[in-house]
Image 1: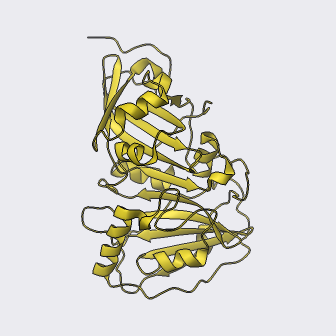
Image 2: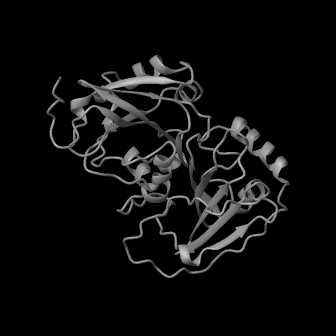
Image 3: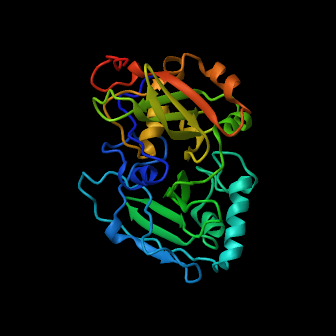
Length: 327
């Protein structure tokens, strides 16, 4: 299976912020099972902001769904009941525990919230005491909630997640961070060790269009677990030297979670996450790294927090496959 478009993902510091606010898919996604694609209607959102936790002047926003199509009129706005907000230090301690232990559950469950099973009211019981802001919009029977954690524990960047709710049930979860540190959990080797061999591994590596000079290249590695219902995407800046691109991948991934009952392909899950695609296809790990998924798993599971990889540069040139001339 090939994805016909390129991932344009900018991560780590300002690059990841660019992803969050600007890198959204400009095309609609395929309908499947109970999840439906919808547009966030920003001007009509109801904003619920904590009175205890102070938020920054500029609040980072989670990715929006496509805005290049006519925006339907919202059918209504939900007004849920919120629990009392915890004091800042208690909230930080609980957030850190949830990030470290995931509420005692396995992905695609996140903090005790399970796509396809958890209700929105149950989700609120978990997040409203510790969230700094919850933004809600509703359109055509689909509610979209963006939940922000601006008062993150020390050593962790502000982060948040977006979820779609249908008939009161959480449909999916999209988790990302908003700074250069990110969320220092879910390293690639740790995910491999805990969740086993992925169903597929996809790779993308590129620089600027038609740029054959040596220098930085963004390399994405995505672990796709269709039977478990999630993918974890790592994006790291590497270097192009000679005929190879080399990069080291650590933690701070982007996570997209859904019910495995949907039987999504990687391209379907990628679009449902709202990620933007471009001109060149991502490649399976067998073509990008010269190893199949089983070998990738055996090589990098339990291999520490840093995983270093390399791929042939000619696979990723945008204009043609002419290698960079050797000085």
